[in-house]
Image 1 (spheres, rainbow, N blue to C red):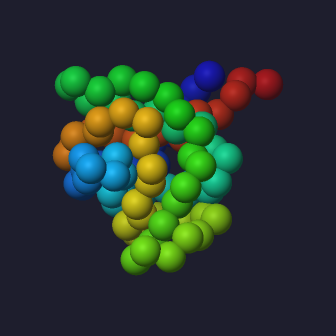
Image 2 (cartoon, rainbow, N blue to C red):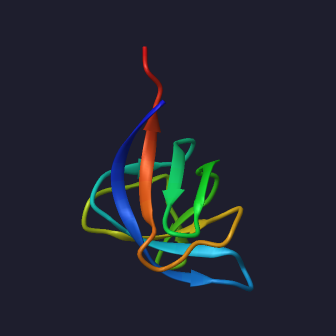
Length: 86
């Protein structure tokens, strides 16, 4: 699988395990994303996506979204949308 950079983590809420991402690309529910940083390296499916506490199905470049994450992410971690090679 190849990845396309779609954003960067700007904040992490530990108690609810949510990462805030400043988007430079598009993201939607069902996408597979990869978080990569100095202490972060994992893939997950996008199952919950919110803008200003409102559930959305997709978001685009320039937006800031909250994403439920399976593991801890850190400020500055890069976010890539995985694209299967066909």
